[in-house]
Each structure stands twice: as structure tokens, then as C-alpha cells.
Image (cartoon, rainbow over all chains, first blue to last red; front, side, top):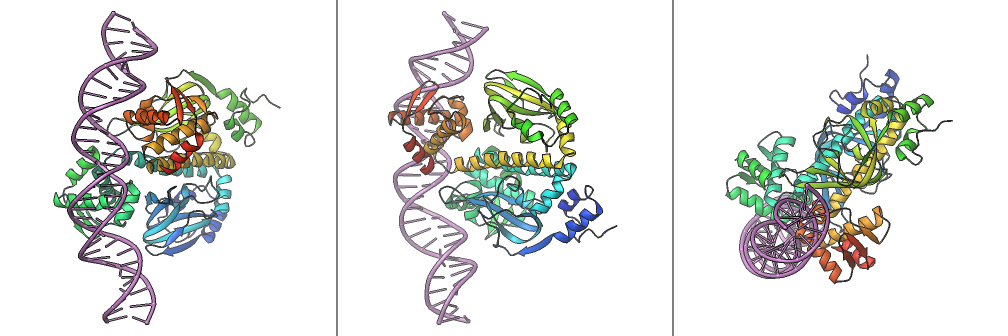
Length: 228
Length: 228
DNA sequence: CGCGGCTTTGATGTTCATCAAGTAAAGTGG
DNA sequence: CCACTTTACTTGATGAACATCAAAGCCGCG
């Protein structure tokens, strides 16, 4: 058999392997490269030409765009095994969003033409990628619609649960986003993010220590997220 | 050569042909079926199992979902040559949205397994579909984000321009949506949709006659859409 | 003809953004 | 390492934007 790169749990590899020939796998592995990003560093910049397929191996990133009014809007938070450059890779020539690391991150990079070639010569593999693509988009759209129909308290509750549940699997966690970024994510002002966090703290629903959040009353928070 | 079904301008066919063998094309054509829907009729119902690939041949439809609070939210308006069931087809087992005709419509229906088989055995075709998928999702996400950052006047202006420009290519058109549906599309209340339409009428930006809208001052409307 | 849904307008109050001002924290250059 | 600047955070006060409630006219449809 083969070493198949050194990334043992890479979902991307999991998707590709089984569809590829030995030689394809070898070129796949030799072709890929990894890059490290510290928290805050730019991984992809809006407007950049799309020449590579970027995959998040570890860490946490935010996808965001400069809206028409110049204000930034966060489109999604991506965690490992999310395909970072899945959104427009196959339709656009240039990125219409930026990606920055909000925690130290490692990305795995493959030449886009190479990927296109592999997909182009392997329909079943394509189906898997499409499935993933479809799911990622569905989630983003669903989130945007869910958030939209909530009032501010509900949105904050939603995002706190999102981090506790989906990202950190822990009731205590460090917010990877500034208050301002949270505002950009759920469509409200920084001041109100702070205000409502303070409110939750006073109501003993959460404890706050700078960026560290502890969810003290998960049930109540969930009720607010669902109802508000 | 071949008759290639009777749909001469079908984009779907355009995508498929060139990638398919003669025999594939024949089965493609013989396999497909068409359905007619009158305005208001349900084409796809949320929760339904996805067994078919639905393509809009003529007419106009709305994609919408029942939000968490029970309120309906319109996700997108699809016009011919948009793939109606592109959103979740390759990731979900059941539709998480509904589709109804907002104008008399004709859909073209292909068995999903059949499509999957064709795609699975033809990577280049898959790339084309992915491109389309990617573009559709990008548009929906972009629209949601654009709308979100506007105030109500801007949203109404946006949707009026959208219909005039993207759907009807005419400054005079019949609104295919009720006031309530417009509200569901751009995230506001029915009353405010009406109020702002009236306001635009009083300001002589538009003329209203029931569902018929005439854009009288396109430039001003555009300014409101961009700024507000 | 009457019922229900769609449309319209007005009045009211809530929610939220904006403005202002101050504190804390974090990065920067000497 | 400290003064300095900048950026993030916080709270309060104010007004604007918006949802909600209420009432009435309209239209299509059984």
C-alpha cells in the first residue's frame, strides 16, 4: 500500500481515496502543500484570483466580505474538515469573499486545475464533492435565514450555543471573535452585542471574563435562541 | 443526428449534450417528463423525499421554507433555466424547502438516480453542474447579505429593480408576489411593504395599479437601493 | 350574499442604531 | 521598559426605524 500523505484523518483525502488510482493518489499527495497561519492572518483576500483549492486542516477561520456600504459581513465560520474555498471555486474566477484565521490554523492547498482534472475524470468523486458543496451552502443559507428571523437576544443566544455546541463542545470557551465581529456575523451593532452579553451576565445565564464565556444556564439560553 | 427531445433552448440539455453518448442522450430524452403548474400550485413540498431532479422550463417559482417560528420565508425566486431542485438535491434526502408556481410554469423532471448515474460516469459534466450549483448558491447567499444590510426602503427598491431588471426586463410589470410574500422575501412586515410602496408612489418614483408596477424614476430608485 | 384573504392607513410602543464619552487592553516606537 | 497611540470594550442617553395592533375597504369565490 501507500503512505497516502501524512494526514491520517483528512476528510478531503477520505473523499478522494477510493476513487483514485494509485498513481493519482501519489500525484495528489506530492502535489499538495500545507501552510500555517497565525490568528489574525489573512488566508484568502477578496478579489484574489482563484487558482488553488484550499482546505482547512486545523484551526478556525472566518469567511467574510466587504458589503456594498463598505461594512464587513461575516458569511460563515469554518472549522476543520470544512472546505474553505468551496463556495465559489467552481463558478467564479475571483474570490468574492476573504478568509482570515481566527485561531492558529493550517490549510492544505491543492492546485485548482489539478483538482478539476481529477474531478473531470472521475464522476463518482464529483458526486461526493457536490454533496459536500451542497451541504455547506445549505447550512450557510439556513443560518442566514434562521438568524434573520430572530431578534437580537435570540441571535446572541444562537451564536453562543453555536460556539459551545458546534465548535468547542464545551460550555466554557474562549470567543474566537471580537464583539465587533460577532456583530458582523449576526447583523447588529457592536454596542448591542455588548449590551446583550452584559444582560445575559446580569441574568446569570452566562459568565463573562473578557473573551472567556461560560454558559451557566444552557436551557434558558436555548429557550431564548429558539423563541427570540 | 437526433431530435434531442423537443426542447430546443433547454440549458440543462445544453449542459448535458456534448458530454453524453448518443445512447445516453436517447435515454435522457425518453426518460424525461414534463409537468404543468398553474399559478399558485405546489411543485415541491417541504419534507418530501427527493427522488427527482426538477428543472424549470418556463414560468416563475418561489422557493420558501417554514421558519422555526412557523412563519414562511422566501429563499429565492427562480426563473427558467434555474435549476429548481439544485439546492439540496445532492446532500439531503428530503427537501427542506417548498416550491410553488407564482406564474404558470412548466417543469422538466428527471429521475434523480438517473441523473446521478450520468454524472457519476461523466466527470466533465459534473464540473458543469457544480459550476451551476455554485453560482446559484452564491447568488442566494449574496442576495441575503445584500438585503440584510439595507433598511426597508432600500429593500423595496432592491426588489422592484430585481423584478424590472432580472425577471421582466421591463419598467412596467405585474408583481408576481403578494405584498405579504414580498415581506417574506426581504424580511419585513406586510404593512411596511405597503407603506413604503405608497411612499414611493407619493414621491412619484413608481406608479401602482394593484399588482401592476411602473417604475417612473429608475435612477432615484436605484439610488435608494444602493444607499438605503 | 357572506366569508376569508389581501390591501390599506393610522396610532402606538418596542426594538434597535446612533451618538457620545469613558475605561481597559493591546500594540508601537523611542 | 515606558510613554504613546490605537483598537477593543463598556455604559448611558436619545431618537429613528420598525413591528404590532386595530379598523376598515376591497376583491374573489363558493
